[in-house]
Image 1 (tube, rainbow, N blue to C red):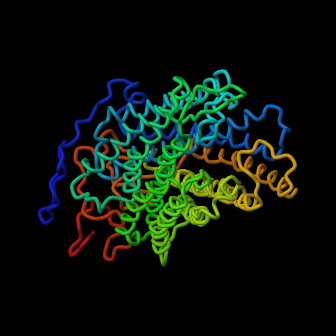
Image 2 (image 1 turned 60 degrees about the vertical axis):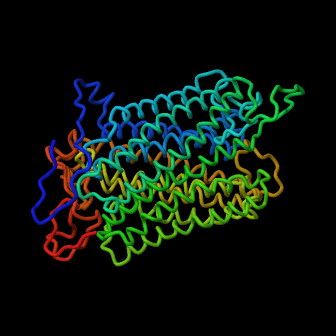
Image 3 (image 1 turned 45 degrees about the vertical axis):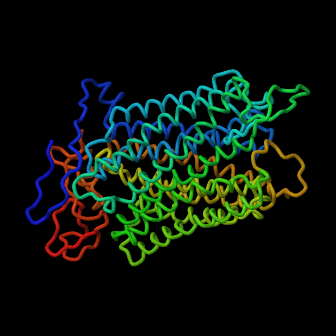
Length: 588
């Protein structure tokens, strides 16, 4: 393969890396199952993540039914409730959100957006998906072993997580830890691909400061994950040794049911440090790709260049750096030294500054823009509102004096779900509606998409906004049942019933999305090559959907940034990244 010829009056830098030698499949299995094409791997990642996410949705119904109707549903006993809380949290945070943003969107968009033919290590990329799939199957298999899955809570804190009174003590916790270890191994293979592809496989003219913010978000998140996941990896290995070999990394000397255990001298707090050293960067491992996607959706559907592009890039980097030094705000109630609490409170509030800059830039991008209220745009705007609301409550919880009385209440559940649950899921939906035409060559139904958005957006607020009130009342989280609690009024029980009914309705309403997704594969309107009239490189491929190698015989040459909208003198209201420069043009 050779690069495109360059006009005589333009001299983009020569290619730094030789063109990739593509692997060509020789059978149906190597083309669609054990495939090395990043686009197929992306669909495999996304399909698996969505499937396991549906399981997490069902588990959330189990939790809500018990909270609304305590003891009324025969099969929901205390063990089932705590197992559902644990599996729902772990699946959503790690196996669904992380996998779909990095493994799904990362695999599909990075090569197309930077002008590469594929990931730089296609075979390793293929292995990363299959290790992720095995990790997911190991996790789900805990439902089929004696005792079922672990019910230790998604944070898996010892000593509770490996003591005999905890659901899933026999095999569930072992499978959970083994699954997480496998997941991290698989992600490491994928993460190295994302980082090296961005750094080494960009096409001619695609400088770092011409990359779409989606790529910047995924790139920064992958770097963070490569630094943060090892903390969780060693925590899982050490806790697995405590459970199976009798070591005492995290287990202190203790007596259980009148019997002195063999554990000596371990530190449960050490596990919390290791877990949250992963756990808080994980919030931004999910959020940064979402930030990038939202930036691109707003720019494309508002027909306006992103405001303050360089500021947005540096804000992504600043958020990534600061997110590595805020983990302790999850541990205010652990008895840490007050000076540590002061440090983590300051860094927690500091990370709000670059995050607020991004919000200001999104709002200023919308200012005086030609906004098209398409389905992707609605989901992007829904994310913007939801993330701001959730972020404001995060400022409260970042302060020690406020967090301590609220940390064990539904206020934290409401905050966390607004920021880490609803906001990223809105971005996922918006991204699917936006890039579905590129993946399939067909459009999804706009009317069904808007119905889906309004039910999901309004329903999410009806579910989680009242939880702030319940949390301020002091209603605890993770309790199977509360019994007679004097400080919680009777009206709270009624509100819990209302929340549960809405949660069931909103969950079932997601069938609209799946109907639209699969129906449009055959009956959707033909999309053409660039239905949104977007300027970024992925929409400029010679074929839609893109063929093997993405770009045909010649790689593209990039002349400008991906946000050239409303350009004076241009034949249309945008200029693609690979369109030759106009006379007198000075593009970033």
